Length: 75
Image 1 (tube, rainbow, N blue to C red):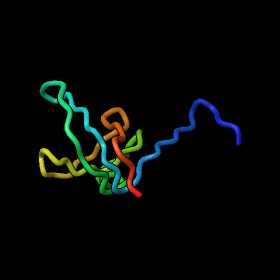
Image 2: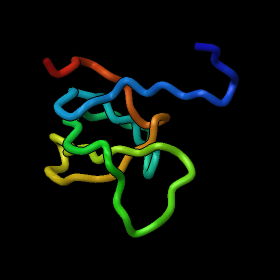
Image 3: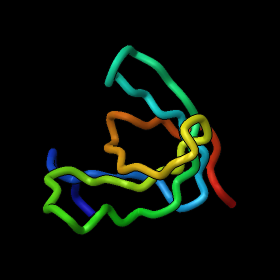
């Protein structure tokens, strides 16, 4: 298999513990669990997105690759 510069491998799956980086108000980080690899269907997305349940906020939101770092993978 030959890869080109447009191939993207995002090894994220349901149940992974991730660190969420957010810069909405200030550069902060929190932790969350991936609950779905399917983004919300209300709009067409250009980049891959996942739904993450934030442990600090107690709600699920859509995040992009630049917001997440895998801490522990689900088995």
